Length: 345
Image (cartoon, rainbow, N blue to C red; front, side, top):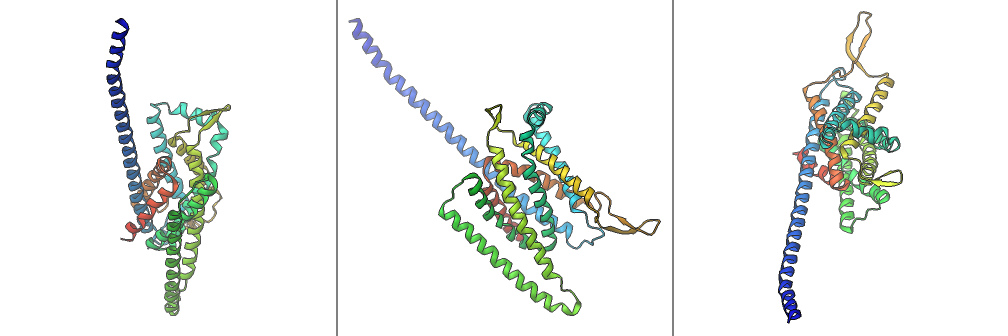
């Protein structure tokens, strides 16, 4: 009789255990669904912010360069150095917040204690610096819509480089879309070349025949910038997402804010070397007491709109890191592609 009572009690408990297990499973599934939805919304928010940033920075940068005489224009290397200083300060502040005030400890662990891992960031820093310098050259020689359209070639180059370096696979539909993008850019470039040649032939009587050369310089700058962007972006994604080794033991990846601190540091060093080596900074149009032309000082030509560009670029660098961390480089490129429509309008 006692054994029968135990069996009855056990059978009575089984439905309760089964129902509790099912409710726990449903709760866990609902939690995972909510988390996945929040992650998707966060990614969309990042892509929206990047689209707005790309559209704004191109238009404002074009405004600061167009219609400004050589004597009053700023030196591109000065702008890059100032914006990298801004990026360094922002990234350090975010790392300070993320580590609950342990910024010095984080720098010691990720920079001084691991110099080999620290110097890996030198490669994308150099490539991004070359890219930023060439982008201002391109903006100075191309219209904003033309620049935005041609710069979308980085989508194709980024996809190819990610396949080679990250062994990433894309569907046939994605490759067809990227190919269509390349064909569209080629059509725009060919149309712009024919229009430029026509304008040059019409203005020969006035001696204004430099439009074709300006277009060529702008297109070459965009092409090299696309290659630099692809290699730098994919390499930075590889470094940002992979776990680091600490004495043969895997450890968590370095935070994206610390990676931005490292990258900004190298970019400032490289920009400073370029500034010291640059013997042709241009002149201000003024003369000194010896009747010699005055060389442009540091931050010459910085207006309010130039400082807007600095803030946009400094914040944009951190935004790029966040998009690469939570999405990938191709989605980042798609976001900048949407900015073509915005900038054209």
